[in-house]
Image (cartoon, rainbow, N blue to C red; front, top):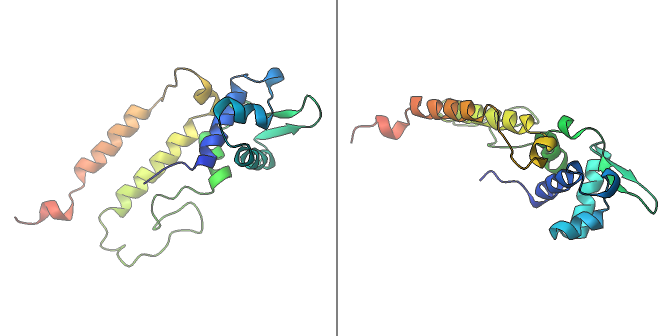
Length: 168
């Protein structure tokens, strides 16, 4: 199952909180964010530190310190955040975002490798096209999502599974 980790979820929540300006001066402490969303503070702190090391957040020290976005929310993609926190997104091991494709003993016979590769690329494009600014809006729009869904549906309907082609 393709699923975000809690860490990635918490990171996106924190970034949306900051993008929406819910903190004073555009910044908020880890404790403020954790309290606002009932997120465990130790886990959120680790996530925020990772985002800071990647330059997505800036940590401000002092009595009025906290975290603020390192750049404009419209320039931070959800894909960048997820990769920063969780590493590469892997739909299947025969093609991944790291280390190049893995050889599979079924690759020459596999009827789903290419369709799954296209789905994987579609997911990456979709996540890359959704910014933190988009996510912070009340009415998140997905431009191009209908076209992407249609292309996946067309891909599925044009692929005949081996079970469908066997006589009954």
